[in-house]
Amino acid sequence: MGFYGDQILPRIINRFMDNEEFVAQRKPCLAGVTGVVLEIGFGSGLNLPHYPSEVRKLYALDPATVGRRLAAERIAASPFPVEFVGLYGEAIPLNNAMVDAVVSTWTLCSIPDPGKALREIRRVLRPGGRFHFVEHGLSPDAKVARWQDRLTPIQKVVGGGCHLNRKIDALVLEAGFEMEQLENVYMKGPKIGTYLYKGVATSA
Picture 1 (cartoon, rainbow, N blue to C red):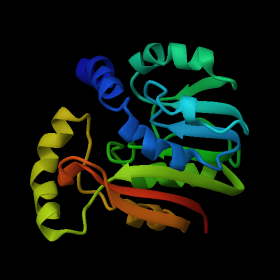
Picture 2: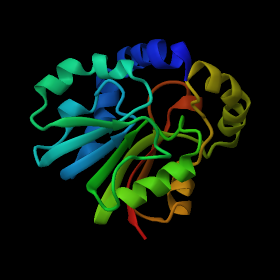
Picture 3: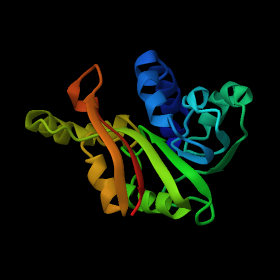
């Protein structure tokens, strides 16, 4: 991952994404999450204060180890235990059918092999379990999409592998999920990075 990705970028993300506009997207994503949960791209634990009271335990997965230190106060205040379980979404170190829900917020954009990660998510979900996500990705506006394609090589360097142009719903469906609900909106800000895919999916 390198020093920048492990030590610097998580601090930038922790500050940039800790505001009410992102909270307004996190809360609906986490609504209905219950039981034992896996969060991929846990980062600095920005989702922790917004999980429902029905969550019993959270497994946290993230490649940047500095996020664990940045999350310390949020973990200490959490009403449920948080256990760090691994680094990469493509190789989740949990048994089959082990969790009730998986959560991903602004994470699938930067995983090197999102298809493999999504298949791993299906593997660890219990029957009837749900995958809750809010991700940015490819815009349906052709002009915006062209700029996303042009700028993604630069964004991958400065954003820790982040792609602006992934079609998140297609990736989820290709991994064998059924889409239970999906909403697409723009957040405030430049359209190249603010088109959201917000949804809940179950194993097909």
